[in-house]
Image: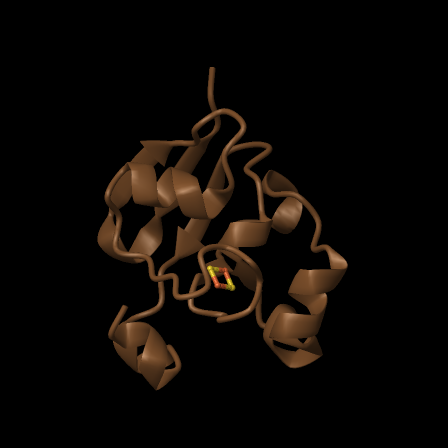
Length: 106
Ligand code: FES
C-alpha cells in the first residue's frame, strides 16, 4: 500500500505515487503546490513544512541543503521536488504569503 500524504492545513490526504517525488505526487493529485524551475532545486517554490517526524520522507540531498539553508531546514522546511515519500507523512503547504513573491505567481 502506498504511503499517505496528509496536507494538514488543507485537511486533505492523498496517496504517494510510486517512484515520484513528493512534488509530482502533489501535482498529480492537483494540490496547490508551486514550481518555477520544474523540480531542479533552484526556485525554492516547492517548499513544504514537515509536520510529522521527518522519517516519512527521504533525507535531504546536497542540492536541497544548499537551496534551503540551515535555518529553513531546522524549521522543518523541505523541497518537495527533491524528496520522496517513504512512509505516511503529514505536511503543511505554505500560503502565498509564506513563499517568495515569484512563486505565488506560478
Ligand atoms: S520545484 Fe523548484 S526548487 Fe523544487
